[in-house]
Image (tube, rainbow over all chains, first blue to last red; front, top):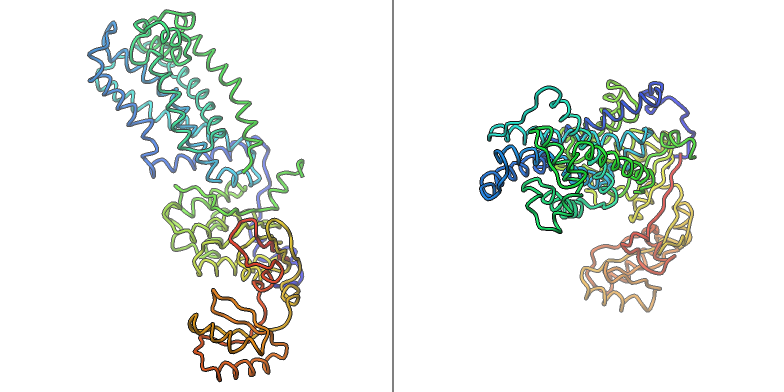
Length: 282
Length: 257
């Protein structure tokens, strides 16, 4: 082994000179963009990764429209009841998708590698959240398209359209953070998938997504009336169809209730997730 | 350290035992991402990545997805990724574990080049041969305890002179060799290698004596050789047992130029 002198500069290692480092905000935006691009580029290569935001909600749509739907009685067409429910469920299921993606990244070590670079650390977790939201939006657009083709008729005149988009984005943002936090805590994508479904599926079934809460027995109805997903589903349904829900304070005012839930989730989960991200080792 | 975290991260690079790469990007895309995150513009990143691709012999699978390349190829991309940082200190955790011989050669020669360029290298390995080939300073660790430290030649010198090794053609032959030689020489026996080993302070003279004894016994052998002690011998001598594949028993190796 050489014990010769140190080549100070010069030689191959100095061939490329790093540009001067821009300010923190510029670096944050640039790095976030690069990392979001990394996630999006992978999508067409593993289309099956999108199955939980595409095939699965389409299955729900078909099963409930054509199998269970005839036994479920709602005022108006079942399409107009079911589709807003499925949109709400898609938002909530963002927890699972974000959780699985986050735990996969953390266990594979790729996050550690990013963090070992001199990057603004917030950009790693921001990219995770933004990438997940984009994936969920893709799925939601597909579900809405299938719904429209099968006879769903939303009434989105005036400000209803922007209101719906705004609510969905707020919902996606907050539920994705829950997923990112859960993914960092659970650390195994299989476990994350399992736990995610075990928690989210009953909450979604209780939330009036598929069947009206009013027809449920006492105990499930009591849970459903305060299930955060109920507020989410009822809010989307109110904005899309003008349907007024009732039964509890949050169901009487679903839109403010949903906003309140989202704000609460953000206040609790974002600082926890950031803290976890800063302290999580290897 | 904490306040200058970015500067530290700019100077240190580490490659873990398991490749930390994005499976669904190609080798080149992974390297580009690292280079861009490091702060290079597109053109500069592209030049840097192409030079790394050359250096690690990645060219033939540069556009394959990481999930579809072999373990050795993955490892090479991983190492290349860790060099995007242009570190002053490079930490490698068992860089050649499970690699095919060609990949191992690529890694070794690259590591040597880096050290020649002024990078300080800290690596752990189970392969004493690797430590011998790459290191200036070695710390032998057995069950979490440092049992010896020094340069490769120091460590080898501690266990003494050259030896004559005789490898029997089969295990019956080994028994015969032991019978034939044990009266006259101080034998070290390694059954799993069918080998007996004799100290050879007089080097070639001892070789001639042992060779004559083996020849007159008429036992078929595979090999007879005079050789310098290896680090494996040093490890055996210093710990009293062979190096086992327990991650705690690693050799910590440091190379500086």
